[in-house]
Length: 153
Image (cartoon, rainbow, N blue to C red; front, side, top):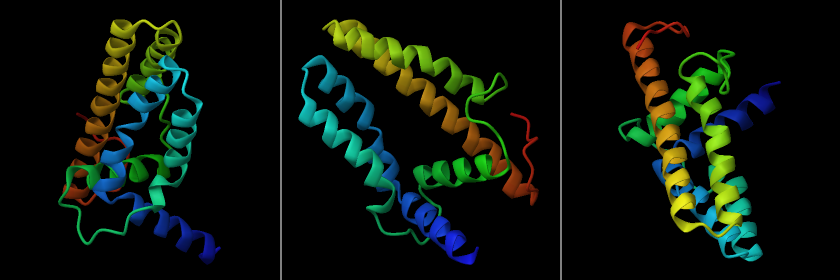
């Protein structure tokens, strides 16, 4: 399946552009604002942007940018069969994030701005913690020239 592999590689190369990752950071706040303000148009734009974002930007030449390494680490992690919602670290951070994000949307639907903002910030913090852990594992494995999933923090 060389065609699928080349499409997958093209997808990841474009998605590894730091503009892709950093602009996606705005999606959760946009969706929470859409729910809070009952703005279907904003919600639709955020969802469409989320879908097309990984292919909007050109491939990068290097992995100097931290957000590029985030995407490379996510690919490395998932292609080795590691789950993103697990009871072990770092997947546990994403698992913990599910009810927090759900609560943020509930608070937004109830028009509770402080709770929406706090839960949204905690959700985003957990996501950054998760991807930071993946980057540390990825960098440790690539520095050692090892391609495994058992790197300790």
